[in-house]
Image (cartoon, rainbow, N blue to C red; front, side, top):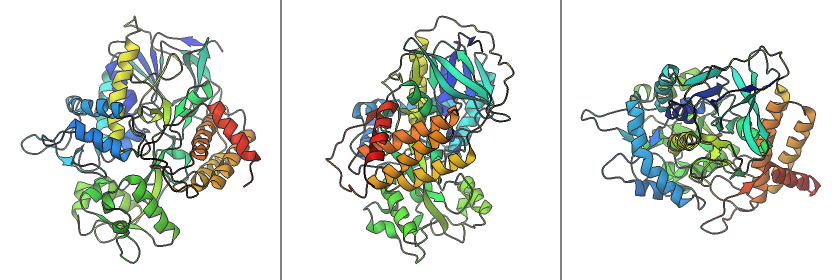
Length: 521
């Protein structure tokens, strides 16, 4: 089929990073590619905590940067942390100007929450746990009204188009009625902002489509992927409910909620001096251990919040009701669930990838900010900072302010990924590349991924998932230490206070996978 050429910048994704970047491009024309109705299927809309920023006069960007470096377990790029936290306040003010109704006191000051590993209360929120949804609602209204933005909804990117060593466009297919045969769109540049990889795991807090496909597209095109092994597991997903698992926001623990087991014991006191406010990786492993021991970990909000949880944290209250729980009178059962991927497409300070013509921002990118263990509520902040930086960098090379709308032809339906294969992949990742890892378990996972690839070799959507899964498991196998969110029970010690970031191409990860299949279990 003949490619469709457009002078628009092609943005893959429709979450916070994608929409914030799209608005920044004005008046340069852009085309957003969104599998779901605009904003509805994005991880950003599910974010409960908020945006981390030093808004309190007693706080500072420098203190925020120090907390970021400390939480990152030795692999945060300190210069990146300093630069990002220095911009944080400006982005909160910008979102406020765009219509985000952040919680404010009577004097106009922002109401701030304290989350794990922060030395100050510095998380700007909306109605307790509604930050992501409210930010996305405000941005979506702006994007809908922006004349320079065209949105293709119900369309999924399935691959990148590389010509003469440069990314020139994307292959896209309609989502309705099953994925269809692809058509090629060629644009002025490609910006990937399509979310993370949490849905590659059987227990996750991510929206159903967020399964590493966009990272996998970049990897299959040859982009370098950084820190792939570092997957953050949120300690307090609500257990026993739907897939994806609803989230009991970390702000609940900031308000004084405690973690108990079925005997009523607070087990975090023995695990870390900060107890419930310890870094997420430590809390997640403690909860995982309680689960494995059959001790039914739970989040107890009764004394700290009581009935106030119903009004101050409505999303958590609604999720509890849907699962038949009353958080006013009952502890909330919790489990550690795949939540955020610190790894991603390696980018420079402007968001450029290692492939000419390709930029990335948001969770799909790895900028050096998060290290081995993301500081709470720094994810939305990074999306804002690099969404703007990518737009500014790409705009330098644009020379047109006008473009006709892109019209897709009718496309015949084709096959989707086999649901049984996707379920098998998610279970293999949970069992072998989850909260606690071993060399034997990772080798088994890599072997399963290879078998899944051969079972449906012509399906781009599945191959994008298995590419990302391969990178995560291969990088985890290569890192023979425990650091941050990456814990190897067969290598439980950290190798030095500071560590090295990992950088792999898919070809290198596949070599590790091939070698692992030859090694004894």
